[in-house]
Image (tube, rainbow, N blue to C red; front, side, top):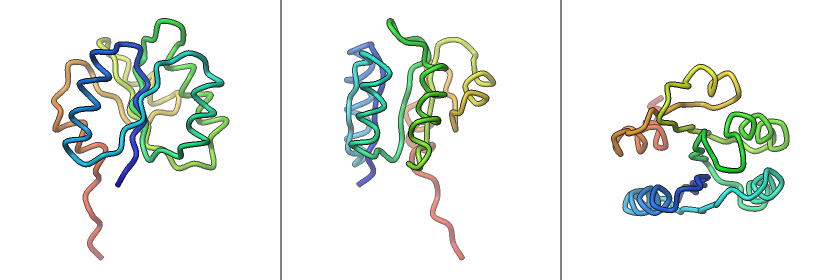
Length: 121
């Protein structure tokens, strides 16, 4: 079962995403962003397969956070998907995200990014 970490300060969004992901058989770790250090430690401890990260957090900047995640968690293969209501795709990808989703997005699009197709050899 793939582990997905949700980093979003909006409890409604976290609940919706958690429900959606659990219905698709993902294990979900919810993080209410308190500090960069807490998030980095949680990633190191939990080794998620993917992170869904909101760009606009109340106390942290998601773009700065993804840079720190890439810096301190470089040994952990992470699929980082960043989300925002603003078109910030290039800034997010440049900072280290694998993907960007503009809110509102279709749930199927998110699941597709988390579940790459099997490679047939």
